[in-house]
Image 1: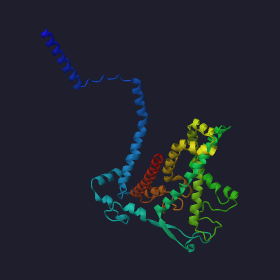
Image 2 (image 1 turned 180 degrees about the vertical axis):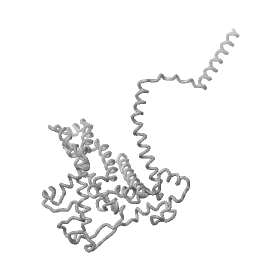
Image 3 (image 1 turned 135 degrees about the vertical axis):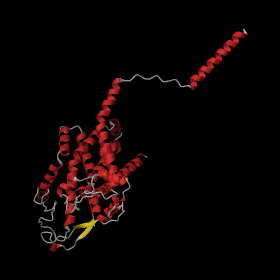
Image 4 (image 1 turned 30 degrees about the vertical axis):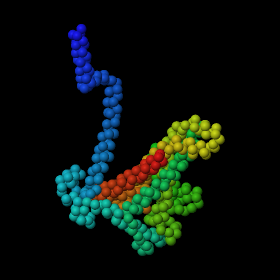
Length: 388
């Protein structure tokens, strides 16, 4: 009997030791069988994404880093290849920071950034007579090129709230069950797919002094005043500012009209996702249409509105083609400070000027990138406060 008890106790000890060892030493997980269909889908997915990933890395992130490095140097069209110049930079060659050729110091990596805030160029004079000639100048003035083009860029952002309100109005109208709603959506979207050049030249015809717009308004406004053209204009008015304000206003009108269709489509899609049961409950409680729109529809549309505002501000800060097509940059003088956007200044100094200092254009580009980044962060900060 005693031997049986001892054997049972020994067996229990062995079982306990085995259990402890199994607990200490983790068991190898069984390898799941590979799902061939899922693997094939993943491979095809990465294959389609690869060109976009490579393009983004090379032409956005790598280009951004190169532009940032060049912005502290004196790199220009006569400096050789970019990679050779960067090799000098990483090799510790201080000659890449020599700014004496452009009026700076021998070692001055922040020269272009200071230059951006201090560059003052001739901007215009008072109108006297029928042409601008040396004898008709009565008051000339200079202005900071970056400040002027940045002001123009911000001025064009006025079209964002105007476009948002109009597109919201048309989207609400189109979301109702009316005949021909799809036809109106197509008609309003056509300007989005039309050529920018064609639209600009159409507006040039419409806003001529003897064009349709002035005929409808019964005015003789010089919407696109050129210093080489004659207009019956009040001599006491500074025509450079009148040109700037009128032409910029025309560009805002054109930009709103051109971008209306895309924003309408997004709002129509957002309106289709508004909770219908909540609207019905509000109607049963006696809420009018205006209250339902502000209390029910707008909160559901907020993500679409936020997306439109953020992307519109980013795109608006990079406006280039429209002002350039109305008043092209003179490669021997510079952008038209009354109408050109900030990107025109980057293009002129970085590419068009002779010799073109790509490093100077890169510095202007970095300044614009910081401005856009700060504006975007501010919008997300406002969004977070709203959610809190």
